[in-house]
Image (cartoon, rainbow, N blue to C red; front, side):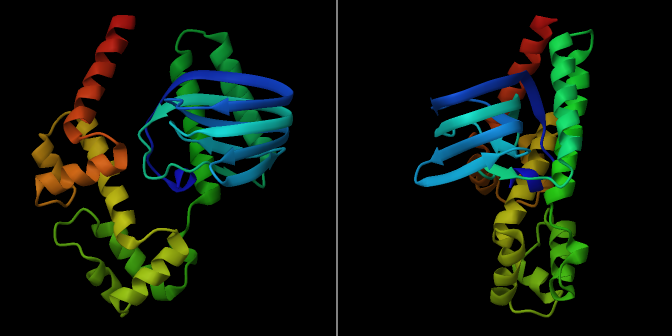
Length: 263
């Protein structure tokens, strides 16, 4: 889940405030993510066969390339459009924070900075977005310490050892004296995904960071993330990100050149 991810790199390209009413919009294939806060809303989203409503103070994430229909009686919203490294979930997500006023101030702050466009505004806006995402994580992330003791040891082992080449779900289960089948069942209950899918997501996020650092070959990145077979690493990386490791690396280089040209 986007709101439960603890590492997402982003590049903002717009911040908007919209005020619409009695409208219907259909969005197809937008190539950017969106994170929004609804100041005042009576909105219904339809994604395929799923439908859900949004009201005041909803914080909502819409991933890139998600087709949806929005029907709004009222929709006053501040939205941040950005490109992100997040790729493990393609569902629209939304929640209602207990401290809605804090989120309102943060979203209004990033909008003000973006509109003013003073020197360094992109860095300042990025800092505010990171603060927003940190707060989303705090408000949503599962806390291992509050899970039943019977699963916490295994979950902690998984997080501490996901990038080890000898990692296995069986070893994680053994930390709590469970069978692998029972541990898989409990883990999915609390985390919403299987243990191995969680591990793959952690590995790919680490791989993205190492590739971005520029110090390692792709083979070294694969090894550092727990893979003994580069081809298997490449397959899993592509499943998570939509591109191969080499194309991801090339894309980072191209982005750097674009930024240099702008400056």
